[in-house]
Length: 108
Image (cartoon, rainbow, N blue to C red; front, top):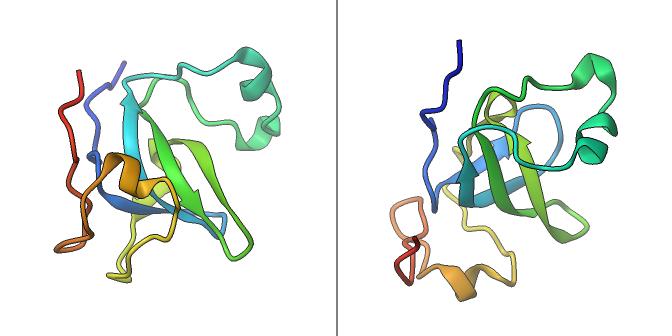
């Protein structure tokens, strides 16, 4: 059964279930919308189903900032209450308030 209702929302701070990074959702795809090459680069035993929401995150780990594309099954809410330090946050969002980032403009 195809499930396309997103569990998480834009501006929410999430962390990866298995890998040590966290980030802020800035876009959501109802189902997988990246390249086959990207998908095939994931080890087969770890590949998520394509039939679920995938999230674009402004992500950070202890070493760097980057953009991540992650399946819903691999994300959980970040419970630290701490802001994310990604340098591109100010381009999209307002100040971190009540555990989330409000959008600065209307998206389509």
